Length: 532
Image (tube, rainbow, N blue to C red; front, side, top):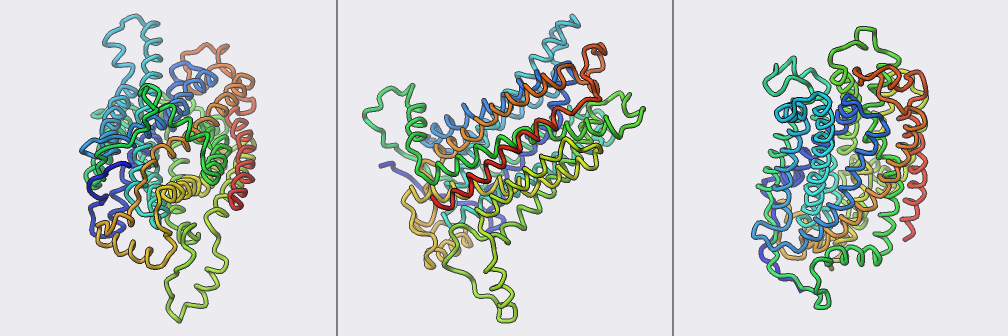
């Protein structure tokens, strides 16, 4: 068997502080995602790409998830670095993310240093922007994979839901910060010090934030060190070992893990177009129905559209952040059925009545899928950016559950496979609580081994990314049929004959409407998890 040295621990004097430090990197990850999702689609459209071409660029997201996360998971699982299995990859990936963000924000300036011809410079600007976007996606997926596995590796089974909930909270906080910064006029506040446009300043701030949050988590967490790995003597070809291990694990997934992956697969058919295009949809809705003539002729339409979209996503992230704090209190944890603290006698009847009807996490996951589907079904009928903002904000509730439930269930199943004792026993639970309060693992069994957490979370991400390819194909077809030209709001240098008709149906809204069908299927599939 594998040989380990040391025990996992997190700095901090309270459980809340330790959870914050452990999941702090999630703030930088979602901050970066927020900048990318809010501004990159309008930015690519402003460079002269059509929506159909932009949808092909966004293949970077699922492609990086499909390739990077499973491979990084396997490589990290078997790393014998003295710094741990996850933290070195988090640090290296964060530096690559930061450099790529700066290249993305200053593509025109970089190209102008080497190319003088206008037409060639425009083409090379598009190429560099796309390559930088791919680099951001590939490297941030590596950071995300190891960040999630670090939570599983460090916490005991009884605290997996708490860790997943904190990761969701920190992710929501990162979105709030990122979207709030995108919604204000940064150039007007800071001047041209960090760049002369809103997008440039956001990329600089996101790069610094990614490095800062990664440093905090890596400084605060101490990992167990893997000294040696037991290898299968039949696996002599190292080149194919990673692919072989992933493939063999996919084919032999335990039934409950397979059910979790199936539910995630269908839900992401609906979530992907919302995540990529919702801010652009709100911005387009504003310019089509609410904007004045002066606003339509703005010198920084990209910044104006980005701020409108960021405002909507700020509200959405605030709702998601509040939900990440409130819902865990209102929802019964999957492995918390045998021990409940006795409430004070004065409120005991109220607490007992509440606990009697307290929904479990699986029920909340099913309801979240249905709520999201209903919100997406009404997007084609939005004729005001305020109504569009309300729809986006409502989705913060199901998104909070979607980011929390799958990792909770998977974390529990992975640790059960690692031979952990039953976390529902009272003596185990109380021992784990005392351990976390002291900030030190009491015994080897009180902390999660998570030996193959990287592999299983990598496989989960395969089930996240494959539907993104399907969603990209669907959105590309819809864009080609409804809006085949360049953006009339952003591509100012394009000839009017090259732009799409702004009076027709909004292709993004139609795409999100169709994605909602997948969310309904996800609700049905999630319900089946109860019987596995």
